[in-house]
Length: 365
Image (cartoon, rainbow, N blue to C red; front, side, top):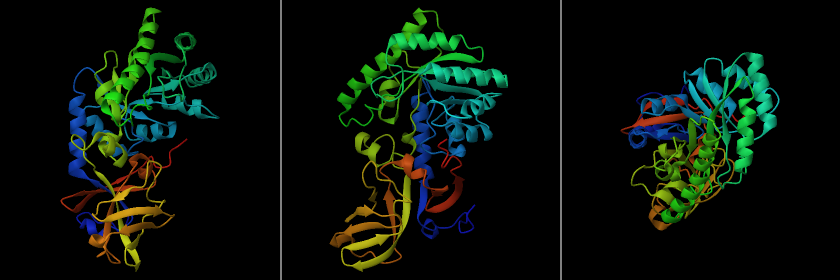
């Protein structure tokens, strides 16, 4: 733990910039999503949002069947912390990576996405070399136009190719309707989501008609959890951002169910002229690919970020700010903001109650 962080200290004493997690709101979000998936469709939350084994274990205690990772290195860290059911919702390819995955699969229920035969061949060889068994799901392009098979014929061909590999176990299909999750109009989002889900579920049914057992049909993000999560044939949902509800998701979904729980605490370090304040949180503490984050302060607007500074424009109602004052900034994108920090400062009743290390920070391999 950082020597300057003392459990019980007032949150105003926490050195800035600091990533602040409100424990009460976090737990309410956690339980609310867990309750939604208490039926036949299960939650397999994506840990790329928080990158923290402590939080992943909390999600499992709240009912999640396992976790989803974006990268092999994330899965390795999570396995080190005792998590045994992991889906890597991405292709694991490149020098040495199939071998690392095969080593990880010894004693872990590990599953990985594939969408091409060469990768399947590499995974199969590695599994045999290590004497392990790797679970495999076929990624299906459902309209996001990223990775994934592009046709039923290709999906079927890949399934046959997987079944011929002794070290691989065919588990099912996955698809991410990422092109739908940020559609502001809920009716339009639901319509687009149903179209994407139909492609995925039809792919699963097609494989079953050819004799394949399809255990997993995985989909969904925070913006579509309540749509994909009730679509017939979907078995699990990979939502992650619901825990923190950043500015982007809140702007689309509102805060009626899930409330903002994550903030960056900053300090005013300069007030060179009326109407302008500089804070100590810049691009090394905040990300802005989804738009500039904004302060939790009426009359203040974040106008720009440089490496170490944030530029606040102040209306008269906020021009009282002075050097040393604290300003809470609401991340526009929680996932990438988290990856800039080493730890969460967990607060309850305005006191620091825990420090949780972001053990998967930088794990992009």
